[in-house]
Length: 59
Image (cartoon, rainbow, N blue to C red):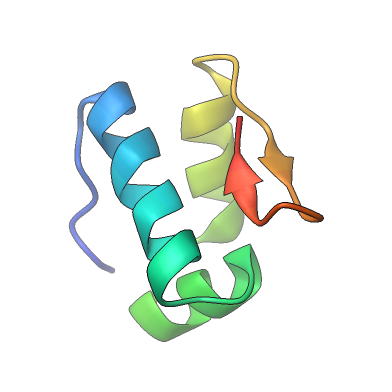
């Protein structure tokens, strides 16, 4: 599994940058980097962020 940033705000920034610059979806990012999408969504969800599929970003 990819080493994800531990700080939630850095994780949010890193994830959204990856989604904006390299991946068309959360699923593509997670599959390519061997990240559990439920775990990533849970970690960001714990900070109040949700994935918006239409905009391909967490807010």
